[in-house]
Every structure is written in C-alpha cells, then in structure tokens.
Length: 223
Image (cartoon, rainbow, N blue to C red; front, side):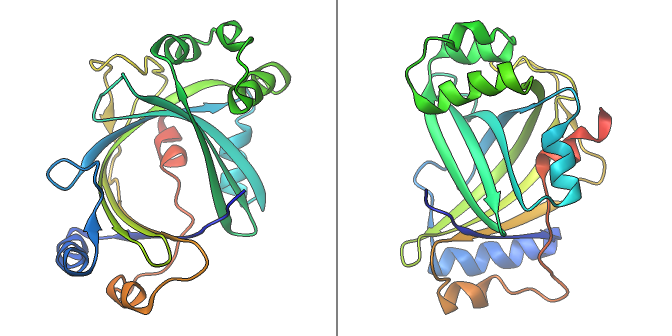
C-alpha cells in the first residue's frame, strides 16, 4: 500500500487568490476539472458509537474511514474509497461501484453487496456486519485541483463545504444540503516521497500552520 504525506491548512479567501495565481504558473490543472474546479459529493460511514468520528477527534494514530464518492453529480461513475492513516501518513484505496450497488449501500441494504468478489467491497460488507458501519451523512464541497508530476504532488483548494446532516440519499441531486456555519477554506498538499522546493515555496503563507482538519468531522456538528 502506497502511503503519502499530507498537509492541511485553513486559509482565507485572500490566500486563495494568491495561491490560485502562484499555482497556475507552476502546476497543471487536474484534467477532470471543469473551468478549473469540480464538485465533490461524498457519503461517509460510521457506526452507532461514531468510531470514525471519535478516532479523528481523539487523534488516534492508526485509523480508517469509508466513503462513497462521485464528481460533478455524475452518478454514472461512483467509487468506494477507504482512507487509512498511520503515523501521519495517508493512503487511499478506491474501486468503482455500479449505480445499483451505490444506491443499495446508501439505503443501508448491505445484503446487495454480500456476493461481491471485489476485496474492498468485501471489506466494507464485512465491517457493516462486524462493526455496524452504516451511511452517516453526505459531505459536499467544491475543489480546485492542481498537479505536479515530480513527487506526484497534488494541491487542492476546497471550499463551500455543505452537510447533508442525516441525509444519506447520495444519488439524489435534489438532496438538500446546508452550508457549514463559518466553513473554512482548506488547502491540501499531498505528495509521495519528496515535496519539490518550488511547490513547498509556493504554498507557504504567513500565519498558516498545518492542522488536522476533517470535512466529515465538521459536517457532523449538526448530528
């Protein structure tokens, strides 16, 4: 499994303007972006005791969380993702889901994936049985992604974070989500074994420090 380094910073709109200009000079826009950005919708899973949420808030060193995700409301391509963290390093596994599988999972009908031969789907099913994982809430946001081949660097600007609260109707584009009060703008920097100096310098901002921010955690403020 490939683990990556990750920085997260809460930044201001003024910082966005500065970074957008800097990064556009030295990095490429992600090929999947439309007019420089795309819309992300994720459905996160947790159990009755909020294991994933508590481990995040308590800073547990080894933890994981599952989500299903689509982009730009395109439900023809939905993926199941497992994000793991250990010793501050992150990894992500991802597999495609059919629309029928995604809808069944969103409905909590885990029996519909019981016969899957895909290891990650098998793991989700197993933990729905053993840990009681269930769909918890939808998280929406907009993302401006930049990429840089040396170091496999990815820099993103995420904003307009919204929560579905207890809504799990993931494939319904009319599912009501509400903006997070005082929702921050998040700068994320991810890389493999090294971060090129040119990128390190470009993302430096005054009075900006690395923080352990979670969109899932901030969206759970309402329940």
